[in-house]
Amino acid sequence: MSPTAVEFAQSGLVGGRTAQIVDGGSVECHAYDVAPLEEGKVRIRTVQSAVSPGTEMTFLGASPSNPYLRRHWDPDLRLFIDGAPSMQYPISFGYRAAGEVVESGDASVPVGHRVYGNWKHTEFTQLPVAQALQQTLPAELSWADGVDIGQMGPICVNAVCFAGGEHRGAPVVVFGAGPVGLITAQVARADGASKVYVVDRLPKRLEFAAALGLEPIEAGPDVDVARMLKSRHGSEGIPVAFEATGNASALNEAIRVVRRLGLVVAVGFYQGDAVGLKLGDEFHHNGIRVVCGQIGNLHPTMTWDALRARTLELALTGKLVLGGLSRLVVPIEQVARGFEALSRPAEVLQVAIDYPARP
Picture 1: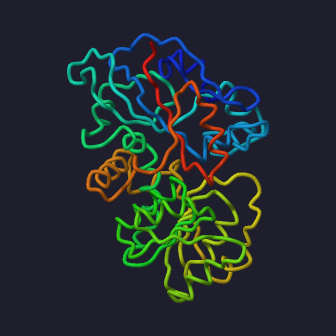
Picture 2: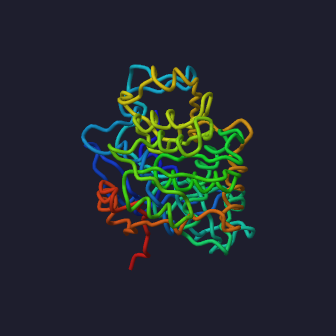
Picture 3: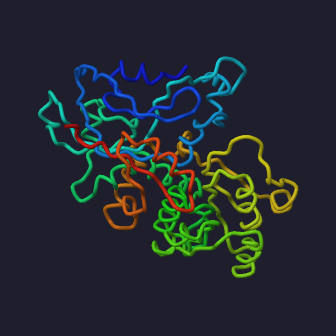
């Protein structure tokens, strides 16, 4: 069973003002005692963290959709089975953060050292000295950039790895102009795609895509994206599509848009029944390959270190915009307001949390 927020606090992984989800699915800011610093570690004060607009939202509300809250994950069988849920409230969550060292017993990692990582939405955490050194945030990058280097950037680099190079020199399509879609589209372009189309139903998000030099396409009930693009590039013109919404209907459109024996990399987090997925249509007739590009399963050629190094390389060379993507910033005390804002995707792309010093 996964640790609760209380157990994370006892281990020093969370401390001070911390976002947590409580029974009933609501979000609150709770203050935990700061555990003593363990030997061989440094204490990090979080400067900024950011919410995952996909995974973290599945824990919210009276009827959360995350399978860990409904079933038991058997790590040996790698199956969800009936039994006690693998997670219980209160839940400490989060995986996008950047901060600075405020306590250290090792001269190689002085106080003030800038670090990026994938820790929880919490004011204080601890990292091993070696990890803090390895995850140094370069001075050329902002705190907002750093938030996305530990995990969000690697999620998207990993997804593009699953294209196996088939996207290079060809047009590709990304479904979803959320943070994952916009970053994946940039990585695919940097990795050789000749043109990257980004499909979304929200005009504001398509404006973000256009500002990045991507090709926006507004989806809607009267728009057949696959027909439009296959008419433009031919039935064999698009080898790869990335599905980054977690919506089964969008996955179906990704299947429709690629060529015969084409590849769809599923990056989104799909939950519940796959309503809108028609496996007897183009999937069957065109022999489409669908592969899960989720970060829970690293591409066989990659490691976490390699994914983060590639993210840093792209950010430092200006080929990847991270912190420059639009975000609503709220103080940790108002974390519930930040999560509420994500229910308005037409207005808010993503939400970041600041941890201002207390008086």
